[in-house]
Every structure is written in C-alpha cells, then in structure tokens.
Amino acid sequence: MGDDIVAAAAESSRHAEGMVSVQRHVAVVRSMLQTGESERLWVRAVRAEHGHAGALMITDRRLLFSGLGFVSQSQEAWPLAVVADVRVGDHGLALRVLGQPERFTGKFADLARVAEALPTATGAAGESIAGELERLVRLRDSGVLTEAEFEGAKRRLLK
Image 1 (cartoon, rainbow, N blue to C red):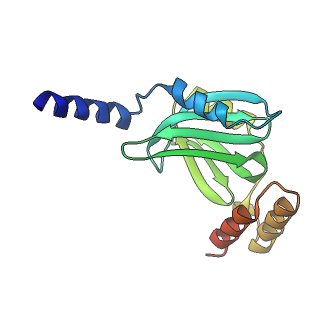
Image 2: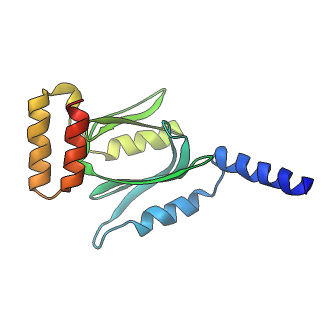
Image 3: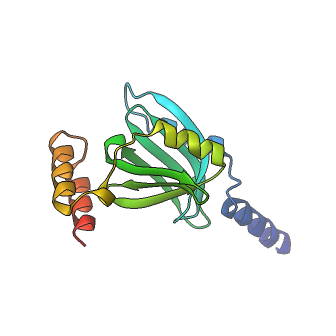
C-alpha cells in the first residue's frame, strides 16, 4: 500500500510540473481543428493563471490551447479576431482574449514566435467601452462569435 501512495504522489508531481507529454496536448489541439483549418505553429506553454502545462497552437483561424494542471485541465479555442494586445516579455506571452487578460509562460524564443504569428490588432486597453462593444457586435454579426461568447464578453466588459 505504501508503494501505491508513493507512485500516486510521483504521478501527481509529474502532472503538476507539466511533464505530461506535450505530444498528448498537440494531439488534442489537432483534434480541435475544423475542416479546412490549417495549423501554423505550436509550442509548449503553460497557461499561467491556471497552471496548466501543454500545447499552444496557432492556426489560420484560431489560437488553441490544451493543458493539464494538478487537479484540472483546459482546452480553449479562440478566434484570432478576438485576440489583441499581444506582447512577449520577461513574464511570458501576454494578450487579451475577448477583452480579458491571458498569459502564457515557456521558452522565450517559442513565445516570441507565437507573438510574431498572432494578429497585431490593438484591443480593449486602447479603446472606449462603446468602441469595444461595437467591435463585439461586428464579430457576433459576422459569425466569429457565438451569441453566448458575445454575451460573456459583453458582461466582462461592463463589469
């Protein structure tokens, strides 16, 4: 029984430290690709706020992430049109998705490649609330955002 506890603790430690094979996460994000969507690049990254280690992928349409933390996991798919304020620095890759901050850590060179490949649009930080709402309406009306994504972004913006 003691060996089982030690083995379970070692397995949990490997997951918590992000040592789960990144190939598993690459396979997950590849399974998220839509018909006709093209993979541009992927890197190993950690979604800082959640502590999820995994793969960050850019396609011709979206930014995808699959990661695993100590007790939870995440899979995200963000249209490139809702990604803004992309910066890479000492604290990792910082960006805004639907007006909300996201930060990824990893190898600086990898994160710099991601930053270079992402759109350079400025987002909510440089716009008025009315301007950002108008942008969200355009994204919803053009089909980039679902009604639920639009409502969630609007609610966060008006907090």
